[in-house]
Image (tube, rainbow, N blue to C red; front, top):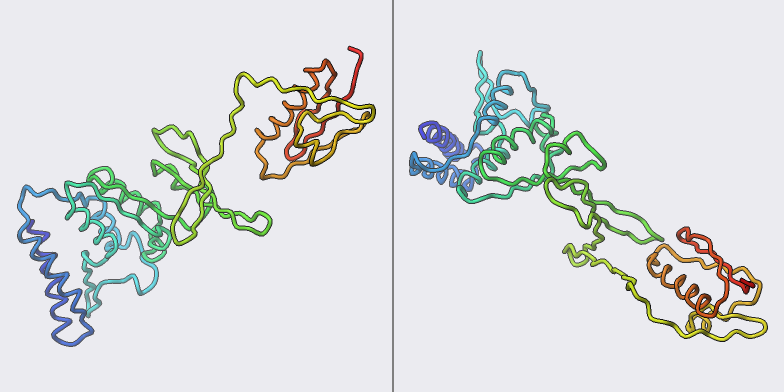
Length: 303
C-alpha cells in the first residue's frame, strides 16, 4: 500500500507541476492522477491486488540496460547532469493502465484486448514473446484475467504455443469477390466440431454464414423408372431430362459442376441415375467423381 501511495502521489505531483508552470499540462491527466491517488489511499490491506512480479522484473531490466528501448519516443525518464532518473510508473504506460484496470475490477474477471501486440513490441523495442510472457504470468495465471492478442502477421508464429486458442482471419478472392474466412487453428481443451467459418463485415458488424448441411437418408424412396425410346434414355431425373434433354444411346456424358456446388448434391444426382438403371435391370458404369467434374457413362448390357 505504501508503494502504491508513493507512486500515485509522485505522478499526481508531476502532473500538477506541469499544469502550474505551463509546460503543456493536461487537465484530464491531472484529474486521472488525483483519482488514482485517492484510490490508493483508500485501498485497505485486504483488498485484492494484481500480481506485478513480471512487470517489475521487466522494468528493472529496462532500467539496468539489459533490454533497450528503440527510439527517443519510448524513453520516459529525465536526464540531468550526472544522473538519469526513470519513472517506473510511466516506463510502460500501456501495461500500467492494463494492470490498474484489472486491479480495480478484482475479484471480477477482466477481458483485455491487445491490438496489436506487434505495435506494442515495436514501440518499446521489446520482443512480443516477452510482453506476452509478462502479461501471461501476472494477469492470466495470477489475477483472473483473459487476454486476446492481435497479430499483424499470418501463418504460424513462435507465440502460438503461449495461448490457449489461435484463430486466423483470412481474405480470399473468388471470381473477383472478396471472401472472408475464420479458421480455428487451436483451441486447447475443447473439441472443435466446426473449424472453419465464413463471415461478412456488412454494416460494420461481423455476421457468420450458417452452413448448409445436406443429409442423405438411410432409406431412399423408390423412384419410378422413366421409359426409354429407340434413340435416347433417361437420366433418371425428370427435371434434368426437361432442361438438358435426354441422353443419346451409346454416348459419353460429362457433367461439370462449379466450386460452389456441394459434393452431397453431386452424390444425390449420381444416386438418382444409379437407382433408375438398377430399377429396370439395366447396367451402369461410372467413374469416381473428381471435384469439380464428374464423368459417367451408361448403356444396356446383357447381364
